[in-house]
Length: 112
Length: 111
Image (cartoon, rainbow over the protein chains, first blue to last red):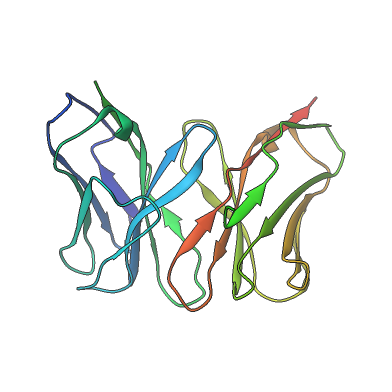
């Protein structure tokens, strides 16, 4: 039981490059989330998926797209990376209505 | 106005003391409240969840919720140096699936 698994752990991109951050869970989570964390800013919600087949914008969705491929997988795509997207990205999932979030180990992304 | 506000700290307490961490939230429809601990370079881990007014105790940790004042707190008794971390307050807003986080309070427990 791996929980919430994110890949890659680290990534360096040049401005304008694209990439997809992968997230997979084996904890029967119905809802999945993508957050970014910047110094002094806490965790900010980018996108979330309340259930398989649905996605919704969070606080900071611009420059990102997501795909809820199936119940297990929720990916985050940067189509044209910008230095402002340098951050630590966390994927999280939760099972039911009042369940807490369970986080993956994070992806540290640097855009030069 | 941010959905969830926390004092960024750092909050310094001596070993063995009680650490008190506070959080306020803006949406009166919020129903679920969580405290996470995050060590430097690591992911947030759940410490406590609380859903109704009053206190909830788990070991050395006590969460307190006052919905009328839109205030939630975390008390850590007998603080240990291993408790030194950033503590994040999270709020689930109403019937939506969104979770909002405060910016975190950094706690230093001095031996």
